[in-house]
Image (cartoon, one colour):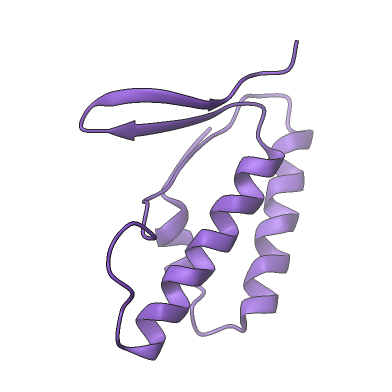
Length: 94
């Protein structure tokens, strides 16, 4: 299963509270972990740019960061791709 992308998933729920979005994503992560097939979750990196001046944009950037952290914590492997180059951030447990 490929989910492309986490920021679109979050954006579709942006009218909900942060707590509701985080709870829904945590439940989704549990379902992915329990599935008998592998899951790949793609996300955009939003935290490396300037801090948005607009409050809703800051909220979205912060929420995306929180969801990415939860995802990385639950994942067996985490990869970062920059300019077409892969960097392994977390290895699959032995």
